[in-house]
Image (cartoon, rainbow, N blue to C red; front, side, top):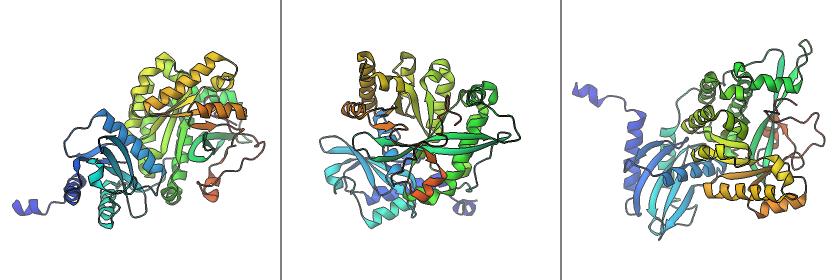
Length: 415
């Protein structure tokens, strides 16, 4: 029996724990107070003290977001005072794909190096490479499960968020949909398609098509995404929100496509939160578990939505476009927009303004601290298949008067 125990294959968790001890020995004398290892979803895989407070949990999510979108970045840190701080080191495999992070609470002076360059040593880099391989999933890289709508061809478009202050690109995209009905099938008006998607009886059929196609594209372009990461958000219909089967489909799509879940998010409208709070909370907790992020769309700071802002998966607030348009004419709307921008900063979330119709509006929104802008006047959508040829980091040229322009989901399921 003893000989059999000696030859037992070690579990992945055991290998992670052994590597954690090896890393701890390598960092001896560097002023480390505690250390933890997290996978790509932010879940704890090992912790030196066994506990982690809320501030550290929030830091881990911020760090993974930053490291996922900046492939050349080695670390992310936040000072806590008196020379002490948290530092997250990216656990990337030899190809550069991010699989998690090593987080240390340390004396930054003892740790040495400048911000983003701490412990930039070959031996430490090899340990992080090994950690990435330990954290990497073992699922086969099959294509995502296919879902179809009878008589309908679906084309995915994307629209990029732009930085308000620097007018730069962000590599953050909202996924839009163009659905074309086959000639042999009865023509369906856009509002009918939207109503069908919002119907709880639909089971999220249209959402499954969109998510399945997106995961297939992400899987097919994973080499480029490892080098030039980009984040994508999908609008969630009420049909999908109220469907148990959609959660199962989404988890299977992520698992079989073998993509980084931190690069995928879902947009939920404030009205959906007010009407179906329990279902929204269930979905947000699902996103937190699998590692996806959530954006609240058409946000007005309604009191019914405030409890949801405590959830870690909620990472972005998209201001209701009616407030953005009215802000320069109406003092109440202006106060609401300013409150949302300030509240987002306090909560550590990103804030997005939509439908910016003038340079004056853009300048004012930038001045009050809104992070990103989105709109057809700023940058038009393009088919997702064109991202690979344009490269994700290059500016996207707006095509005048798209034919026709893709619509967002909810009132935005069809072009």
